[in-house]
Image (cartoon, rainbow, N blue to C red):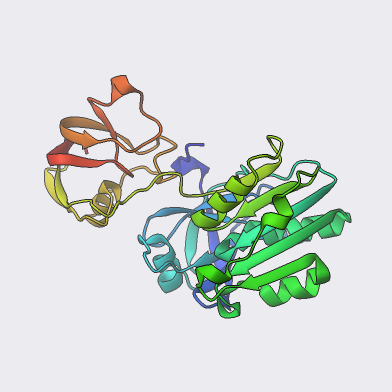
Length: 316
């Protein structure tokens, strides 16, 4: 879904608490007489963070439908979103929030296996609470580096008891949780998995012999925005009459935004098309998942694509 300015709801941070090392929870409330759209477990919202970056965060859920609750991990390699939430989103801060979307919804099943890795616990926790309230059979496997980095751990232990399996590997690959017993024999169980890419790749590989549609993944990073061999380059903004340096570890969108030029964005991962920009000249390394081949000579998605060589001239 392309998110426009008219879609965004002004919300204010009304509570903030520390959940784990590098993870804080933010409770957001809409002002005035705005009625917040409802949502189901697995849903997420897109938040314009204090830096201006648009980021997607799973909704934790709960009985209070006057607020949205999200948990944000400060990433070591933050591109501005999580860092600005931790540094600048204090109680009282206003944030613009898009209505909930759900690409990770629960389907009807006799029972569920919910697998969470690290901050991927956020939609899994919401699902488990929902299934507990319904009296539906489920189990949760929660893997993380250690207890100090495991958000909602104590609350989940208290709520789910022996339905919850917790495993910490201390970052040692030899101590990683062995999921094979869960996938050796296909069952009517539906599996929901959210976590880092290696975890989801492992579950996908182990479940390859299961019937199609039984394994569900949540992944907010479909495109690799910055790569190890990327180089800095320059963009010329024709309408603004500016030249902007794009560092090796930043996108065009981020560099342009840092220079004070406002431009539309939504997914910031090359999948929605909202940052489509007219390309006047230049050799582009197209990395998006939207443009047709016949559009690539005069159009660029500035959230992910870069210069292959030389300077790009953009209609901005």
